[in-house]
Image 1 (cartoon, rainbow, N blue to C red):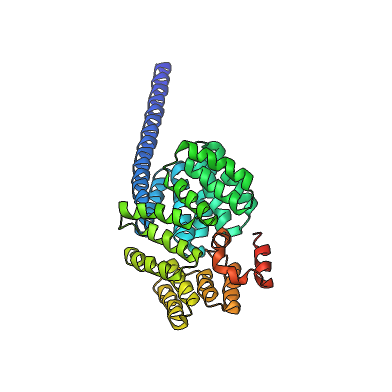
Image 2 (image 1 turned 60 degrees about the vertical axis):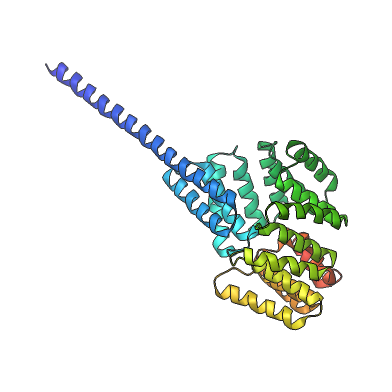
Length: 352
């Protein structure tokens, strides 16, 4: 009788264990299903672009990894979206962005070392917080190795190599990207950048005009045109394009205001340029992050080297966005500073 009771008790315990195991598996499956749903919703919003969509996408990614703490993709997407809101869109401050991307990038790579976008997130940490270009390049290369047919990643790495003056290597990765998807917008933008560097401004303008004709409400082509005209030394044309772009930006206009101020300064319109500096202060008061580097743009246009250097140094000390490779990529703005010993020393400190 005792043996029978013991056997019954063991069977009961086993059934309890099996039920708990089944419940645990079902719960995990439900959690991943919910996490995946939130993640895909975030991707759809991020695809639309723009600061409001990116902020909402980041919130969805956070809910996703809170629903399933083992979901590496959600951590990576969260880190890269926050990096865009800081570095790319220049909307959030380093204090808000850097801790978030460090945390999420580390989690993504720890959970899945073979996830390319996790290594992109690690690269973004270096880009935005340390200016360790070797580590930045190594992480991007790791991402490319894990996803070798991703044209976007290939072009990002190409751009890095180009900025680092490693032109032979850059050409190899650019050619790979062109073979995969020559119609990719990232590939097209990089091709335009190279043509502009070669002085082929009219070819680039014709290419950008096609984008404007296809979607006249898209603000980005007007920004590209404004930067191109600024590089070409045509401030009036740059300002005309910015005048079209700015109303399409829903208030996210710090870069545009700074570039306007730069061009007004070049035209000798000191009062108007100083008014753009005041606009930057007003944006900051409303909560938009305004990098000290953007104020340096305006002072460079005014040929006020002392103030331009003061704000660049401030940006360096604050680890501000719009420094780093952005500073090197927009080097035409600082043409008047190229021979200044202070500027040369800053480039050395930033390993540029």
